[in-house]
Length: 143
Image (cartoon, rainbow, N blue to C red):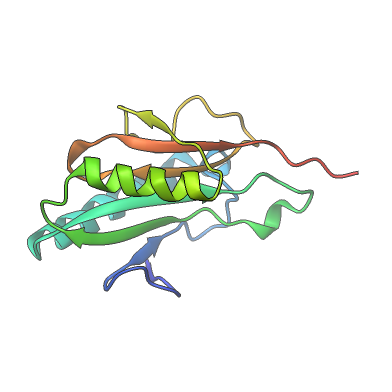
């Protein structure tokens, strides 16, 4: 666990494996399990302070140097009771503004299911059991 270098809100932090992994698909099941335990424990700490947590991960498509990306989850504490619909609407509106389309997933489990091994994505776990938002990125090919 580390404090976010550029925190989005007070208390923002990241959870990452000790051993380098470029994606959840490249991570050991034990490391993924530990990351989920830490994410859940931090969520409980935030809840005790009257906060909810939005969790997100971005996985960039590989460009030949897979070492440039490191798996990490960002945890962003927000005021308790913030409706998942409001968070979703805000993320979708900002996504639309910059040309990103999200699909809503009722299943907010992490890592997201059904992704290709080298597929890039942006994933948000919405607060209050609101599911998740997923944006799939096309693979980047180099010549």
